[in-house]
Amino acid sequence: MQRGISYVGAGLAVLLSGMAHSAMAQSEVKIGEINSYSLLPAFTEPYRKGWQLAVEEINAAGGIDGKKLVVISKDDGGKPADAQTAANELVSSEKVVMLTGTFLSNIGLAVSDFANQKKVFFLAAEPLTDAITWAKGNRYTFRLRPSNYTQAAMLVEEAAKLPAKRWATIAPNYEYGQSAVAVFKKLMSEKRPDVQWVEEQWPPQGKIDAGPVVQAVAAANPEAILNVTFGADLVKFVREGNTRGLFKDRAVVSFLTGEPEYLDPLKEETPEGWIVTGYPWYSIKTPEHDAFAKAYQAKYSDYPRLGSIVGYQTIKSAAAILAKARSDDPEKLIVAAEGLSLSSPFGEITFRKIDHQSTLGAFVGKTAMKDGKGVMVDSVYRKGSDYLPSDGEVAKLRPKE
Image 1 (cartoon, rainbow, N blue to C red):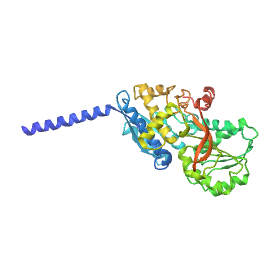
Image 2 (cartoon, rainbow, N blue to C red):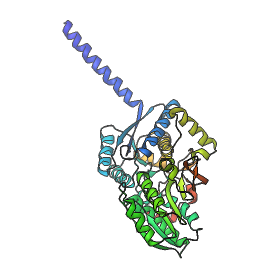
Image 3 (tube, rainbow, N blue to C red):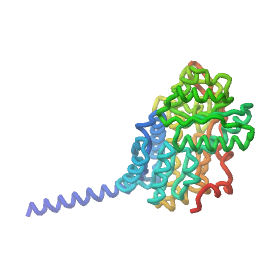
């Protein structure tokens, strides 16, 4: 008899434990996050710190409708197939309510395709290819960072003022580099029909052989150069270019080079006077950015990189979408996200209904040396909304739902 009671007690304990676990699960909102942590730590480590700070702030303020926000993160290793596998595990096993993240453009497109097929909400953080919101855009995918088109339009505004007519381009040979060069050439040729494109170099991403690349560009004798390399490739390209005098008396326009994660490693080799997009955290004086930078430095005893901003704002945006939707239904999340405006360290941003692109902008300025370190000077924040194409133009670029 006593043994029978103990069995009942054990069964009741298991039942109560299950109920407690169920209640715990219901008191959380889980977001899936995917990025190339092992491949690109210079950007993704500050990015991770940014989103972790956002999670901490959101939960300290009461979470999502009183539920704790939990981010479950996976490393895609820089491989599209691995990213899709991670996305599938997050959705099917972890039961996340949305996907966020990705860095490389080809990986962003792979996860976007998964989201479209599985009808899962996806907020792309970093991938810059225009295809993600236009040519291959879909109902379930939104994007935070300003696209190649937006950044190219900002750079072209300055590049078109240069007297240079003969241009060469250098870009990594994958979706991001190809997209950046194509849109820069298109917009630049529209503003300056007299420009000639005399040389293109397409080194493999992460594997540049800088000597032959610099030699080939120099042989074409351009008056200006468009650079799209970043990370370790950028360091090798700059070093070889400095050694061979490639940049002497030549204008250089460069995507991303003003971001601290790419500018800092150049140190005393930093070329001066390049026209760049980037993040001059040390010279931004706004209440929104001051609050972010103060919180970031207090938590990590380090200054923010652009990755920090992207990670932070990705999760802040995801939380705002969830709070507005008051649901984890993907269709309701889409309705909530379309036209949503919210604050960011760079000021107010809006996710456009027409193409799901946010109006987050970028800083444009020039590279310079200060105390043996590369910095951005003469930088101005450009709002994304001032450079994105009209709804009518987007309608021609984006497939009909």
